[in-house]
Length: 272
Image (cartoon, rainbow, N blue to C red; front, side):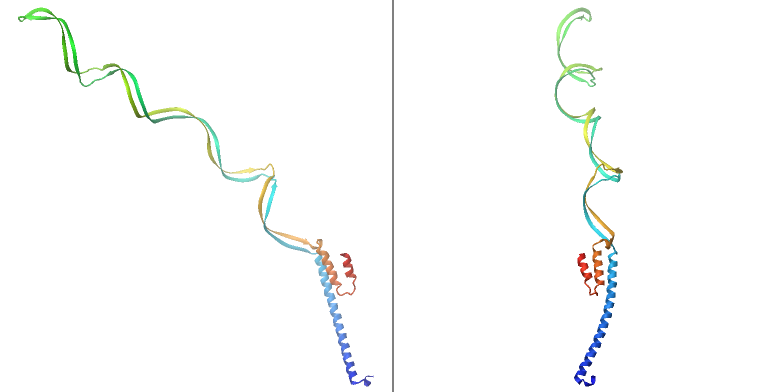
């Protein structure tokens, strides 16, 4: 049969034979690759199905300021350390006794009469001008020829005017009214003894350093920025999230990727 063929036909037949062999080899290789791909896709699909029921476990680091504007009810007593000063005023009422010696400047005019009745010692001689008349009325004996004579009455006034030095051996009584008209400028010690009423508000600054327990009868308003720095462990089950549905659909799609049937695709569209 092949002997009757021309040289060109023989060449064509050889070429077709070689092409068929190569095609069968390629088909075998493709079928083997398809099986391997199907196995791998099934493995990936199984992995996706396992991922649908896995948990995402991670640590979330929170480092930020959270505004807080609320009312907090504190039920327990709190122990606080108090270190402060209290400035206040305290009413003070008392009778303060005063007993002091004070030097008081005095400037005053004195115009008065002073009754003087006292004894004065005069230790030095005093010159007294005597200008007076001494009355004389008595009898005097007049001697006659050197012998006793007779009494002669004498009555006269003898003028006396001279300076005399007088000594005083004893205190001299003095009684008189002395007019005084003078200006007194002096500093006199004056004793003050009295009670002064005091009713004032006294400012005080009291230091307080102690520990106290305080309680709150009602809610305490809080308006602040609270800094938060913490690490929170998070466990997210994928089965309870919407991702599980897509993981399963993806696994099913991967497993049926080598199938020529459209049932899986139609069922997936109907499920949506």
